[in-house]
Image 1 (cartoon, rainbow, N blue to C red):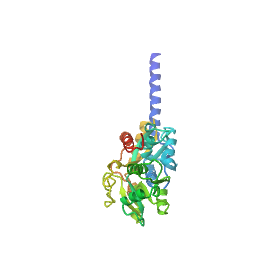
Image 2 (cartoon, rainbow, N blue to C red):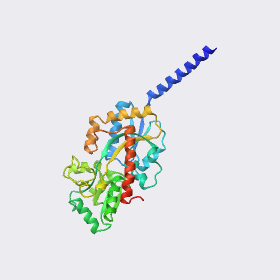
Image 3 (cartoon, rainbow, N blue to C red):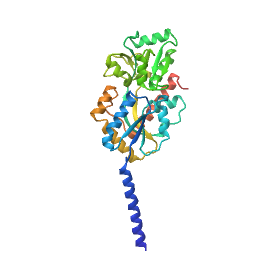
Image 4 (cartoon, rainbow, N blue to C red):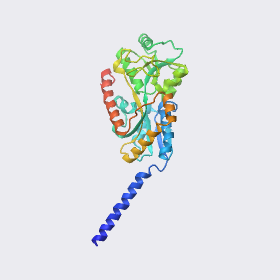
Length: 322
């Protein structure tokens, strides 16, 4: 009797163990949805779509991208915070939604509400104007704003995004009154500049780079620590006398919190391989978002946590938060 019970128990353990292993190795068995928090056409969208397209060969299923713009990415982040952590609902966003927005306004999510999968690009921010603009340098922009309160119109990709915060902080430090005009992504922001609806735009390289290359837009200043390799003639915000405004942001894929480790690893592996394809690199180079050493999983989570902390200190320093 005892022997029979032992055999039954062993069979029970083996049966459910094999089932668990089968379930673990089966993922994914159906298409994965990836919600993109910004409008089509710029770095967040195009980079995510290329990751999705190229990862199909490694996952064996389609990764279907759906744009959900609004609130500078916060609409998509809110949806993802409530999604099932089964690996079939993923998101693509800029890190500002995670490390900046929660400091500056009430959002229904926090840093810990997500599982971070991989970084698929780096945003190099800058201020640009149309080729025929009277602003030849960034100093020209500041002087115009100083002499003409509320007359300078600046297009931004959303309220309290990184590009908005940088100029907002500068305006506070210089006592400037600037009219910020928010859009739902870099593509519509650049369209507004080209159409003469705003005088200046503050966007990531994914927004301005194709137009700078095409000769329709001029880059006046960048927010990085060093001059960009692609635009060595353009000064940095640090060189202009604002070292505290040196900023950078990332593109990242993510999912709801509490995703299974095995699922996350599969996604990390597939997305990492997708980023090594010539097709992805071509898009990344076009938008100047290519990252030589992208972060994954826990490293990405730790880096985002550090960015969140550093941003809080910066925003207090410049008076954006008390």
